[in-house]
Length: 282
Image (cartoon, rainbow, N blue to C red; front, side):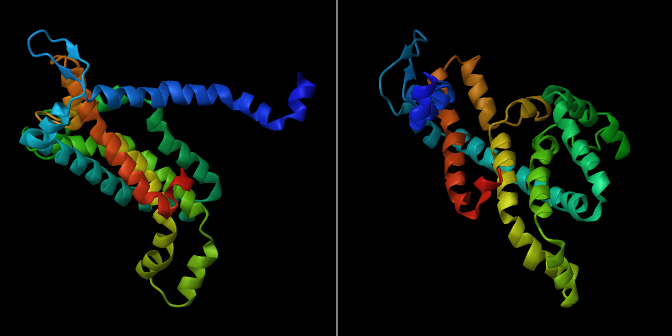
């Protein structure tokens, strides 16, 4: 058998890749296919049974009902706001790690950035719930109960930015490490100030890294439903709508139709950023 496989390298390669490809096709692409198909089903309003017949009723409801358009736009806005905040915070942090900190301390800084990822998602979200509670630490720092932001849309953006910030820092840090110091020195020798050097040299090189990080921050924020459940108050995002229709409403086809919105948005986003080289930075 080994001699036969040695003489047929393509067959050997196919055998090695068969198991992971089978898992990808069945478990991942198969699940997406079932999701897409079930989005065209409906639920009988009288019996509650799923009607497995092709229908555009779910998508028609999403497009015509004002509440679902508002939830979609709100979810896109939250994802975009989280991404922008993460970029603004990650740029100086990653620059310090890559170009200012000593070589010995960089490893410890990377570990410090990764440490929050080792903690449970729920633990971090509930910790922020305690911080933002009425009369909690944030209220105390801002002058007393009721002075803090409380629960709501702002709290959701704040907590999501905290949760996904490491996913933006690391790609930018990797991009800055590949930036030769001689580029910065040459710019300084030519009389360029820090702002001009950043705009003309650093930022163009970092564009693929920023897009790579945004793929994580944008997609994770767009599909999140736990954080908004914990600190969002009455705020509703796409994830909440999916969760509500799977649970209490017991309307799986409509939940599947709503769940296709983030999938379509991310496919369009990935196609848009593909030319920037962001996918090679992942």
